[in-house]
Image: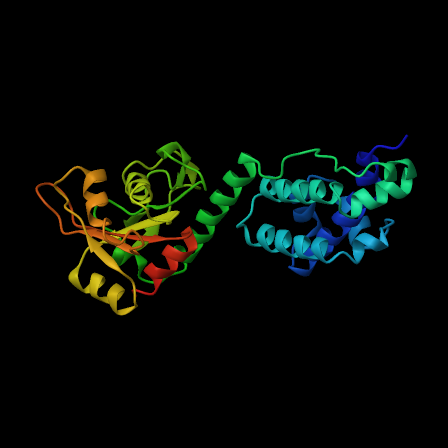
Length: 298
């Protein structure tokens, strides 16, 4: 009797870790940095990097594994992906290989009697909420990176501050929206991001995004910037669809009315009112898209 988990430990894990350690070394990470990211000892990293472990040739030739390793190494090295997200991505990949993929094949070779069964082993659900949450947080971090590297972005921050938000694929309330705690502020001419993104920390921009989605928009991300006629004009010149809503009306009905004729609009804006600062809201498929639209305004 040999469990498929034994195949994972004996065949997949040494191959995967050695490939990932090599990929991280190619991105100039030290062995101690790699050890910290992978949660293993530095001596183990040394063995992986120097090829002192047995690797499965079939897994080495697996294109999907190579693509996964490259994606994880790039994300971990750049800081756009946390170790927990890398772990989730690797876990999902392993489960996919267990259910009719190469690991299932290796398991069948180790236990030939399994060939009698035509069904798949549904060990884990790859569409987990944790995976979706980590991907959403990663998207927001990537978008924030764009804003941090955009010279002059501070000039687009309204007095109330900006926030970059992204909702979970099936999110319905503010607790499902990842954003920057405390908002992005202009501090002496520099855009300052006070903390890593979290869920449930944005109220206003998250509510605007959720209201747009409720009105038929497919947008999953939003960013608010200061209003100016020239800002709206530049967005329109870039081929984006803009619609105005009433700042003094209740937010959700006002946005629903504005999007009634064109729910796919790329930009929402209001020109202010009694005690209400005029603001432009950029909408898009993910946080990087809206961050890049802000960058293109400068």
